[in-house]
Amino acid sequence: MTNPLRDPQDRRLPRIPEPCALVIFGVTGDLARKKLIPAVYDLANRGLLPPSFAVLGFARRDWGDGDFEDIARKAAQSGARTAWREEVWSRLAGNIKFVPGSFEDDAAFDHLAQTLSDLHDESGIPGNAAFYLSIPPSAFPVVLKQLERTGMSDNAKSGGWRRVVVEKPFGYNLATARQLNDLVDDAFTAQDVFRIDHYLGKETVQNIMALRFANNLFEPVWNSNYVDSVQITMAEDVGIGTRAGFYDTVGTARDVVQNHLMQLLALVAMEEPTAFDATAIRTEKLKVLNAITVPTDVFTNTVRGQYLTGWVAGERVPGYLEEKDVPEESKTETYVAMRLGVQNRRWAGVPFYVRAGKRMPRRVTELAISFKKAPHLPFHQTDVEMLGHNQLVIRVQPDEGVMLKFGSKVPGTTMEVRDIAMDFQYGEAFTDASPEAYERLILDVLVGDKTLFPDSAEVEASWNVIDPLEEAWTGSTPEPYRAGEWGPRAADEMLAREGRAWRRA
Image 1 (cartoon, rainbow, N blue to C red):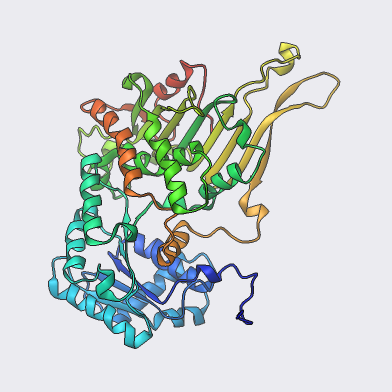
Image 2: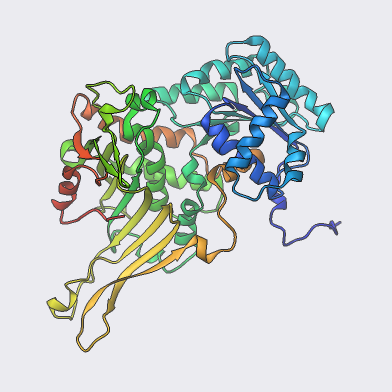
């Protein structure tokens, strides 16, 4: 019998989770305060959380439930995307709990297990819980073993589903990634492990698939017959901040290229999936990641850089070696550019230029597909001096949208053709603001949708690309570039040798 109270137009209903709890380890950290707690409030404000829902924080603090609720309230108020509504927070606050303790404290984890169990009678929440590991990777083993010891990771013992969310980095190289994968798969069943890459939660990243596969305009020319090259750029205007202890051990390639940019490359290059579901999409992405070819001459086709003192947004900023806690002789890269290939029929011969860096002139992440020039131009050469390659640019952040660049006649009595741009911006085309990436991804975890989460095979395939480069770079010194520049000059020369140039984002 049809429910007369259900509006068939309300597409939120299939996306509302069962009664459940979200347990956040490392709840005092920046990620929890700035992203996770505001995302939970925004989900509640949009009516996407069940009436029976609880948030449990775990950290080494001498807090009670009331103290944690005050901290969470301030975090939600300062970071929420949607308007503040006191009645929404009041409903959430009734089931906000805090469990103090260290990761080595057996008694604290026993207390956490009992608190989860008590939610059944107190709040009508059965055994459903997701554990968010917002903690350093070095702490993963001890926390996972505690969850396993107490039975909190066991679906059968809990009487519901138990899921774990693992933040990047997924290991330091292929060997450590495999160790981590084995660790989480031992504690939880493989289908209950969610490896989160927040870039995949961004609306514009998901729009790559919509743009390609929902429109017949692009897919016929999305191949080596028409595409000249692909550029993927992730530029940040900030430095390393207080992350020196972490950043100096990994560098840009491990920090963002292995995960964020390899996933963007896979989405751009993948074949059409048989369905829009997790298994089909991961299958096609994995084919691309396994087909990526690294350059045989690494030092000709890759560039590492390290920023010097310079000016960004009118402010003088220190160089990497002057940042707090960075070793004086550090050879860690803050910029990397590389030329990759995808060895399949669709992309044979098309270079994929990937670059990422810190202390660049502005913050931008974008994908630029540059098309080959028309095979025959009947115009006089002077008529097309200002005409470049047709380009499709997908802006992931901050000005989310899509730009199409093509040639058009300049008004006048002569035939002059130059580039113009058609620009689509999310903020102008839609009345609804795009949800934050963590908002979407937390909801996906709670409903058990793994479409936007890389699996272990994808993680390992990405390390197969980065590991050979890291090995070749061992002992080399990064090229210097001034803060506020678009990277080392060698990166421009790398493209210039092939008659191309980086797109100025």
